[in-house]
Structures are given as C-alpha cells and as structure tokens.
Length: 295
Image 1 (cartoon, rainbow, N blue to C red):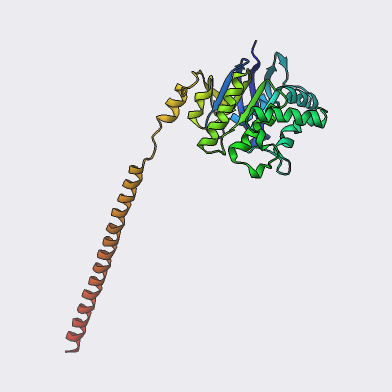
Image 2 (image 1 turned 180 degrees about the vertical axis):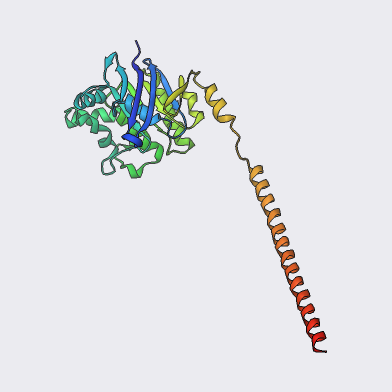
C-alpha cells in the first residue's frame, strides 16, 4: 500500500478569466522510504504539488490518500494535527525566528503539542546533536552560515519524528559546500527510514534520489527510478544536452560587434564626405552661374 497516493488531482487558483491551472490531473504514488526529487522549469507546478502533499493546500479536484486515509477534504484543524504529527517541512528561506536561539527554534514545534519546557529542550538538543549542530545550540540565526542555518531548519523538521520530510529547494540559497552538507544530512535521514520529497533545479542533486519526477505545465511528464550516486537519465538528457553559451561564444559575439561598429563608422564617415562633396559641387556651380550672369 503506497504511503502517498494522488489520483487525478487538479489545483486551480483565481476565478473566471484569471483562473490559473497549477496542477492538471496529477496522479502519483510514493512508497514508504523513497527519496523523490521533483524537477521542472519555474511555474511547472512543483511547489503547488508539495503544498498539496504537505496538507498546506487542498486539491480542487481529485483524491489524496495519506497512509491509506482520505485526507483531501479534512477540516483545517484535523489537517493541521495530521501535518504536525506526520510531516516535517524544510524551506528554501529557512524560516527560523531571528530573535530565538537555535535550540529555541528547534524546540518550537513541540510547544504546540503541549510538551513541557525541560522535555522539549532536551529533545531539541538530541536532534541538534544528530545533525551535528549541538555546539551551536545557543547561537542566533544571524551568527550561523547558510549551511548551518539549513541544518538547524532540518533539525526543527525532525523534532516531531515525522515519517515524511518535504523540502522545497532546500539548497537554493546555499553554495556548493553548503548544498553538499545539507544533501548528505538528508541522505542520512533517508537511510533511517524517512520518506523524503524535495524540489530542486540542480540536476547534480538527483544523485541522492531513488526516483525523479519531472513536471511541466502542471503535469508529470516523466517518472523515473534512479540509482543513488547517478544523475537521472531523463534529467541528463533534458538539461545537459541543451545548447549553452560558452566563453568562446561570448568572445565571438564581442569580436563581431567590434568589427561591425567601425564599418558603421566608416560608412557614416563616407556618407558625410559624399554629402559635403555634393554641397561643395553645388556651391561651385552656383558661383560660376552668378559670374556668367554678371558678365
């Protein structure tokens, strides 16, 4: 039985002529323990798909089953409780509260479960140790690097012990070293049995996935199982084979531009000389005519 199952799910925003079809009859099944990468161009429906999967938004049409439970029409309070207990979110912009320490940020979700301060800080500290951030417990977000902030955000996502981790561009604001740190951490979490679904524009990050879903215009157009450590074939074919501008192309363009500019200048100069020449000829003819007339 799939952990997640979407059947003919559509999502529309707006009304009348301003209606936008963000998801177009999407069907998707995800088993427990999968590491799924979602790719596609901007506006293809990736974030909308994650919002529906994470119970942040409900589909306009179609059905959504989570753990074999029909959840697409749950009330807001029931959806919030199921989301809190089942799903952990990691955002591109981190969403840590700047006036709270790392420990307080990670412990915050436990507050909503009514857990006492001592117990929730102890639990948060254990999670921070798990992600290698225990020595930064009392730092504030502004005192951390981008990779460390995202590790703290991952710890916050894990503190409720969710079975599903949903990450929307978790490395989008990070350099290559920070990206590697975050993806290695997610890989370790996946090995412990968590199901992970993440959006990325970076084809290299599909090396960590066991499956790649490719979207366009609100539809899933490719769904490919992959080997960990290898870039997905579909992604490699779609993204690596696109023509790219090289440094030589740029230099050639500049060279052609430089050649074109003098030609225009010469042409303009010649035209100017011809105009002056014509004016001079006319002037001489006029003077001769006046001289003959006077005689």
